[in-house]
Amino acid sequence: MAQVLEFKLPDLGEGLTEAEIVRWLVEVGDVVAVDQPVVEVETAKAMVEVPCPYGGVVTARFGAEGTELPVGAPLLTVAVGETADGRPAGDAGTPATAGAGRASGREPAAEGSGNVLVGYGTSEAPARRRRVRPAAPAVNGRPRTPEPVRETRPADTPQAAPSARTARPAPEDGPVPVISPLVRRLARQNGLDLRKLTGSGPDGLILRADVEHALRAAGAQDRTDTTEPAAAPAAAGPSASTASVTRVPLKGIRGAVADKLSRSRAEIPDATCWVDADATELMRTRAAMNAAGGPKISVLALLARICTAALARFPELNSSVDTEAREIVRYADVHLGFAAQTERGLVVPVVRDAHTRDAESLTAEFARLTEAAREGTLTPAQLTGGTFTLNNYGVFGVDGSTPIINHPEAAMLGVGRIVPKPWVHEGELAVRQVVQLSLTFDHRVCDGGTAGGFLRYVADCVEQPAVLLRTL
Image 1 (spheres, rainbow, N blue to C red):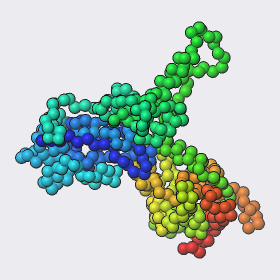
Image 2 (image 1 turned 90 degrees about the vertical axis):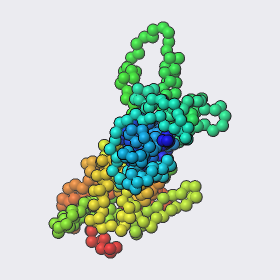
Image 3 (image 1 turned 180 degrees about the vertical axis):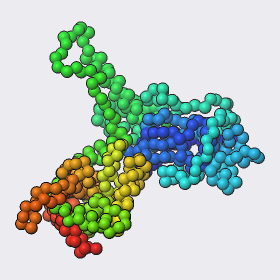
Image 4 (image 1 turned 135 degrees about the vertical axis):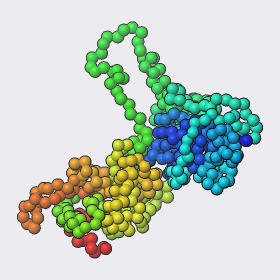
């Protein structure tokens, strides 16, 4: 007999507590294979395809596209061991549906593959989907009365539960059923008592939608209470109509950026120093390298190579601060983040072991990660773990900026546009290619002398690339 198993939103790693359903990859009634991607979700870090560890027939899925679910909330249910015609997999003339089981001839195991999240995708091609209405399966070996397959629809109320379980209010005492720290912060910032809310999630779990609904209801009540029964004279000035106001939710990548930048400014006593540099020789060096044949070298790659050489001389800036232990943590390896603007917002992919790469390897890695960022296929692992960030805001046509440190790192180098400017060169006024470099650093890890020494070395390498030969 088939067994119905519930697949819950897994822990996607890196401290993520919730995700938004972007696109369902299967329909109710489809046959899925073990580890086949079933839904695409957006976390605060990346777009992720979530594979299901069970093979069988999809009997229900929870949450419409655009719904935000906490980790541990049900995603879908699968009748394990059933095929499109409702017979157990492995019967004569009936194909098995579990990917691994079909390949080996073994029956699909009810416990699934065990790979709740396998590399944000699978290596096996997904099975061809077929729409069926499965026979009523048994639960734990006991027959169950047939019932229509259920699925939440967009027409459901905004706080519709992602589970068929009955919502219940939070207890007056004891722990409040909240998983997401974002939900707690939203309630705290608005003075909302979570104990008075009715959670619509599994087992009464309070979701962000519950808090937002309560805040909207409270706002509507406040407006009703302050409305005078008598007609008031028309107020002068602009209309207070809400039609002229647009509210954009701080969620997904935009929300993650907001949280990280706010935390950076709140925790890190940062300072910024800057210098103008003559980049004429750097540009000539790049032109000569590209004229010699082979893959083209990018300016960003040359700047990254200069950064890694500078960090070898000033390792204090390749670090972070452990506030709880009151320790500065210095890293031997340079995992270089770089800012990339995409349609979904600003992301910071990380080039692993940048200090071991030459300019050609850095160019290729920057191009690969930038393309993945624009396509929205970067994984959380590719967006975390940086030790230093390079921010080339010159691509936006600006000369300078005071970068905000990418928490929990200790420094960020900003690079403006490289443009022709009047410059005194060898005692004479000349037109040179000039760039402004700015370094924002955590004043806890070093003093201004160290930061100034790092920035001066970077500027020297930009002005005279041959300086790099000393460290090669």
